[in-house]
Image (cartoon, rainbow, N blue to C red; front, side, top):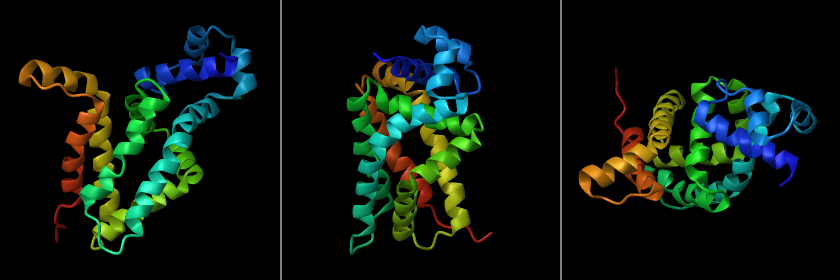
Length: 209
């Protein structure tokens, strides 16, 4: 394995587990068995390393997700919000083929970008992968045209919070399902459970207050 990939793999594990703010470059170099000069040579800074970790996943996810969302946008009939959010399932689950536990790891990393107040990361994702966000916004608007931009912001923010919390505790949820309800659930099952919930939340009636 190349030095660059060793650094990326170590950073990915630590960022997902401890967060971007809670992980030092010293910890990354220790886990990767490289020196700090190697990180500086390949990435230049911690911010660039964070971007590179996210890009490995987004480069795989974005074309599949763009295509799934575009199909909804180009339909003659109005899609449901359940269909819009269900468009994420196959692209997200593909990440498990790309990397072991890729789906959970990616969603945990994405959540870290919000909980760790990594504003530059959100800017990077929206500018580097604009079609994902444009197609998603268009699909939501087509499904629920009465939703204002402000209301859409709030509802999608709450949706992200729900998904991030769910995925960060997915191992515990899978154990609870098995022990308390005798239900065998994998990461695919967890995603399929949360989709109707977030779709219903975004589809809630608009308050006049």
